[in-house]
Image 1: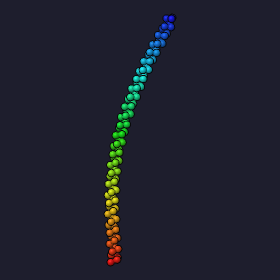
Image 2 (image 1 turned 30 degrees about the vertical axis):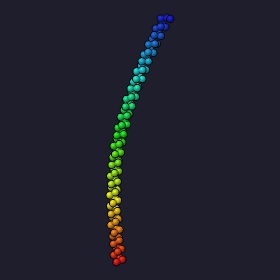
Image 3 (image 1 turned 60 degrees about the vertical axis):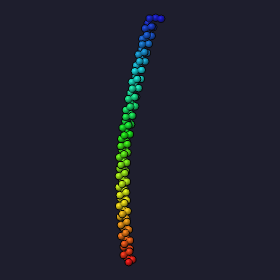
Length: 97
């Protein structure tokens, strides 16, 4: 083999080794970036779940308060209806008697 060919092949081999090292470094960097993105995504999901739970508890509390208000209003309407029916019955008794 000619010394020039050996030099060219050596340079080409060194270039391939360098490119392989660069590719491995890029691959490791991409893996690290993906791991960081996964961790960030999981943190964001956890924060969203916590916020959702907080919002859900607030809605549950508001619904409970609305149920209490509806029960009070229903009771007041029933009392008012009972008073109204009692007055109507008393008026009919006065008319008959």
